[in-house]
Length: 381
Image (cartoon, rainbow, N blue to C red; front, side, top):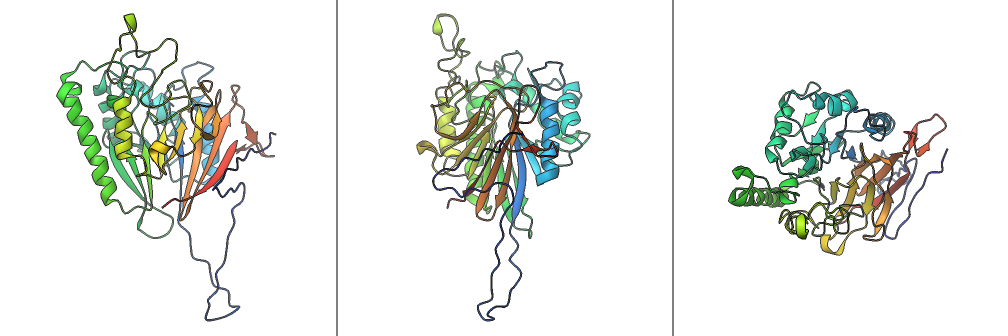
């Protein structure tokens, strides 16, 4: 059994294993103990790039990761999960009866008994194996699947949407999820459909920005979480918005004569979009796209927002540039996800990972998964 790895950073309260409790006393009745005030909690899984299904590829460990996810939820509790896009590899689905829905979602996750709130990724909007993002109409199928999912746990009411959650105490809104549709803003190839190009695409992006700004302005939630496929920053192959895939070989943004295949390919517009709608406005931004596990330190351009990249749900790659962005934690060539707990004044996050042979990075004496990394962050105003 490997030793649990805990990273301690400045300005962090770190807790691993069991929690702590405190009691208060009534100042008017000395030495008379009273029951502690109940604390709100909300627990969820953040996982992305899951959609390989049971395709026979020994390097696609979606089902093994799903089994680990079930065990973590049994041990620590899960109220819901979020899927950060690329839900259906390699080129989306063609209809709500596509067998990939059963293979890549219902079979691994349908019996867990929690809702999965889903974002679209570039492979969900594609017609080629490289996930070029040029067929956005395919993403609509995943919206439609919400109404026919046999388990009822697939949740994507629109391409971009919001969902509120109460905590463990009372009926007040405790957290709010803001799910974005990032692929139309940062695709490799331009969509040939008139509904997803030119003025129509500009209007769609503007409507999404307006929606985010309006929802954030009226939100009463203590915790605000944004979910999308494409990250603001990453130390993986795809990298930071505005510089996506720079330095990779081959570079998917460049064609013959190093001509840019799409004006959106580097994600410069998407970077501006995030800075206007997400950065310093939400507490946590969860994404995928790169197939590693990252928890980044807050960035100067993004304010207080914590950023987690959790794109190792079924595929994995090496960390491409470990020094590109400062991270609390990063792990490549592994498969896994993050378990997150929100409390009144703090966020608890733990990464769980598998080796290439499907074994746990860390396990307890009973063979159950333990986190490879865990930390607690105090909520920022």
